Image (cartoon, rainbow, N blue to C red; front, side, top):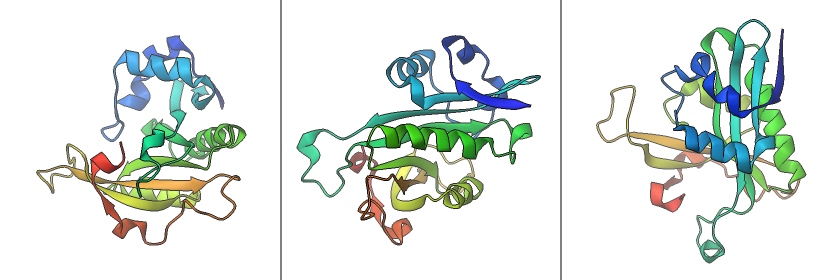
Length: 190
């Protein structure tokens, strides 16, 4: 039996089941604590009664600096999924969907236009999962990741910027057809 709850600072010492996955980005303790202090309602864990933490999501609310508003790459107020991970033995149980829905509700409550995330273009399982949850590829960020775990590239791996509109975006302004073919550089999305 498992349940979702807000992450606590002491939970950060219990993420081994989730963070040992090679596709999960790992950060230093200060990075996690910054998110926990600034966006506590967007940092949630799946607590299993016998296994401990078997998944978590870490997100934030953000927009680019107003000086970027004239840029075609400007992103307005939105929710962002920084990390979503579930321990391998606990996958395909709906944990990722429940965690994502919780972050989406928090973003909607805060009047965000959309929720976005970056995922390795080669991670077909994750891309399919997000598409199944209503996300679509908005753009491809060329060489976003400095490494390529598949070994197919020496320069890094592309990321898909995937988005799901929130209720504020009634005209679907932040969704694009064929986003896989809309190429941008990493400096365009920072």
